[in-house]
Amino acid sequence: MANHKSAEKRIRQAETRRLRNRYVARTTRNAVRKFRLLTDKEEAQKQYPSVCSMLDRLAKKNVIHKNKAGNLKSKLAAHVHSL
Image (cartoon, rainbow, N blue to C red; front, side):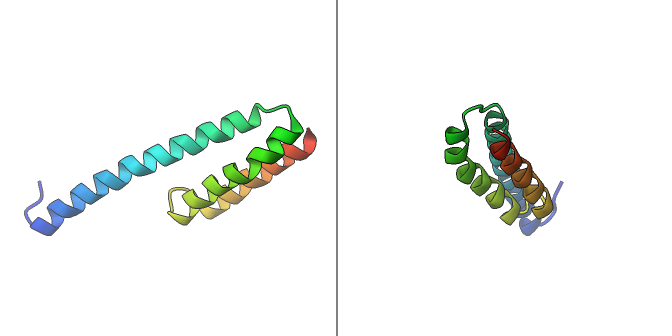
């Protein structure tokens, strides 16, 4: 266990951030899954910017790597064009 006040604070902060990161990552993954199930092109074009925004936010906060976000966005764009 931590012996310093600062170490105890870091543990608290790390736990809070871990839970927040898990929540936003799970929410984004679910949004991507739902997006991939879409079959209507107009609906997909409407939802694409919001899903991309979620991925960009995750990359900005270093929850996922920026290249992973780019790869996912590219695959989602290909999905929209294939409809």
